[in-house]
Length: 188
Length: 122
Image 1: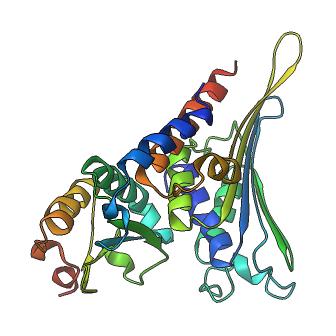
Image 2 (image 1 turned 60 degrees about the vertical axis):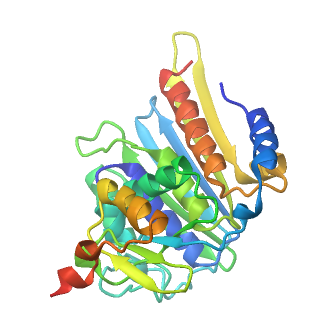
């Protein structure tokens, strides 16, 4: 997969498969520490301590244990990018955290994150999705943190009887995210 | 900066347009979105379909996503379910023929035989 947003689409689907009702995706780009961090937090069925090491094995995880092929491959990618993937799980909270070095030669572009988020909403409109993207930069005077957020709970409040899955709404969400991420990149 | 306020306007506009056609009893389009599907461009296919359905204003059509459909070599896969419940599986779909599926099969009810999965399986 050529960009990080495709990986995120694949990884986040594991939360949906585990019957999560609330999925949270956090991306932090720290240009001071040169660190890229992804966190996917969900309230789906947890992974038992016994199964936890197995989910990283591509040959022993054929979806009956919640994770498929995506997780071991993403773990490899994190390592190639001088980082690490960790997974913590309790019965009602699972935290996947991937860290990479922004300066690594293997580092990928984020790609079309707006298409990933709308695909996830399209996939299961009943699940609440929260997406937060943060950039941390140092200016001559201070440390500057910019944040973009999207919360399907807030969107639903505005939509009332209109479905979040309506094509007109999905297309608005796509533009809203694209716009927000472009502003983050400019770092203003 | 775009704001959530804009959604109110969308809601009002959609309210005016809402008709019986909004009952989702038309064709269903399912895009397979497993790891291999994504790696072969399933996300682009999904968005091509959503854009086309939106452009043609096909309000009774449903677009959904499924997990791996276990036909990895022929990803991206798109399943079309017609109003009688008949299922048609298309293989190796790209953004161009995704639009074709919407225009020819979903809108004009013409199955695109040469793109069906059974042709690839041999």
